[in-house]
Structure formats: C-alpha cells, structure tokens
Amino acid sequence: MKLWISYALLLGWMVVIFVLSSEGHNTSSGRSDAIVQALQSIGVSWQTDLLTFLTRKAAHTVAYLMLGALAFNVVRQHRLSGRMTVAVSVLVVALYAMSDELHQLLVPGRSGEVRDVLIDSTAGLLGVLLAKFIYSKYLLRKSQG
Image (cartoon, rainbow, N blue to C red; front, side, top):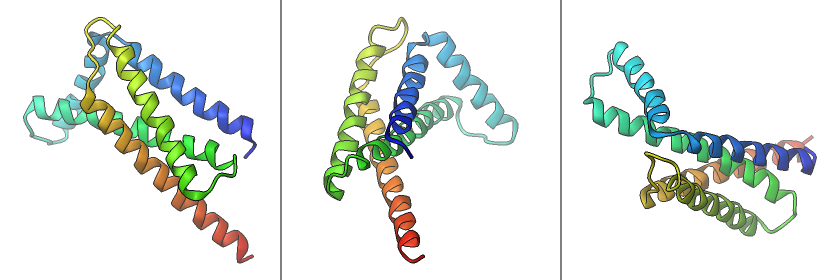
C-alpha cells in the first residue's frame, strides 16, 4: 500500500475519533443507550449501568485497536527495526489517546479520564501487535512463493 494512502487512512480514523469525542454527553449517551437497549432486547440481562460502562469501554477498545493497526501500517513503511516500529506505533496511539482525553475536557458534559487513556493505549498496543502478526504472516507467505 502506498505510504500516502496509509497516512490518509490513519488521519481519517483520527478524525472519526475526534468527531465522536466532540459529541456532547447527550448524543454520546444516546448512542450507548441504544446499544444497551438492543443488547437487553436479545436477552443480555446485566445491570444497565454495568452494560452501559462495558459498551462505552468496548467502543474505546475497537476505536483504538483500529488506530493501532493503522499506525503500525504507516510506521512499518518507514523501515525501522521491528521493535522500533512497534514502539513508535504505540507511542502515536498513546499520545493521541492523551490528546483525545484532553479534548474531551473541553466538550460540555464530557470528562477526560486517565483510565480511558490506559484502555485506549492498551487497545492500541493490541492493534499494533495484531497488525504486526498479520503482516509477518503475509511476508512469510510471500517469501514462500
């Protein structure tokens, strides 16, 4: 994949996260509540507060797992060592997670949480490692013909 396309995908995903983080509390809660109601309608009978919390954290996890994979795809094209590629990719995700939580402090009804930075960074690390695994399998198949 061309480097500029990789950058465009990474920056585009960052914009998606930024836009979602810019939503006020009511909009964000409304989306979470709709998912919780759908889960409850199919028989998930957990306490609503717990289900809401898990839904919101799952959204963070998916968003930042994807960000980690996209960051890895950009950084690997700069031909750093394997460990340096992983480290720089995770650093990109962690810095973005911190900036995202700082941004949420400016959004009415939202808050910035250190816990979310940790969740986001961990999810980003998982995304980086998953992308690295998939890429290494791709290289292995390519080298075998």
